[in-house]
Length: 197
Image (tube, rainbow, N blue to C red; front, side, top):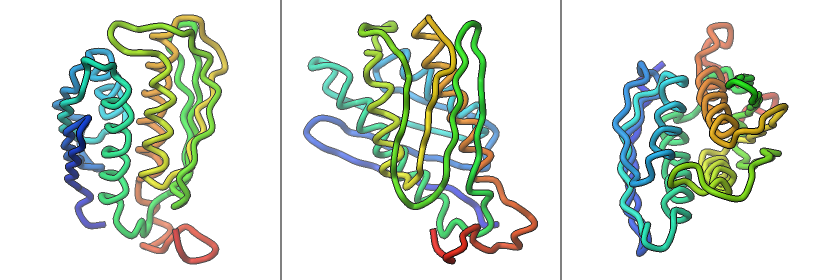
């Protein structure tokens, strides 16, 4: 399998974002979005996904965090899709269930080429640090659409918003890692009955 790395930049009137990712890394991160809790979540995603991730986001935080979080999902999703290339030999499907204290979240995904998000995170209105809880969903929608993956994020238990969101990001990183891994029994073939992803 060739080196699976990508760099993507995107500039709009609302955000300027650059991402560099190595899907076969060790979990090394260098992340700055201007939203402390979001940096923490992206770090957890990459570390548990064993991806090397460098990410910079300069956004219009004087408005709120929405554009920064959603646009980061767009650019990170694009970078993952680019790094995956033709997807030959990948495992494709994976899931992970992560507990964090009272919270329990399962993420299942399919690197299908069809970008869809389905989730049921039961998060309160409000903030975790400087992160609006409603933006977790926006990030996952943007990532799934731009990475071309079908993404399910299901909460089985949880009260504390920090714990629920962190369990989701850790499970997301872990399941993406497993889905991207090479399946040696495929011998480089696409894991698809129709021969395309």
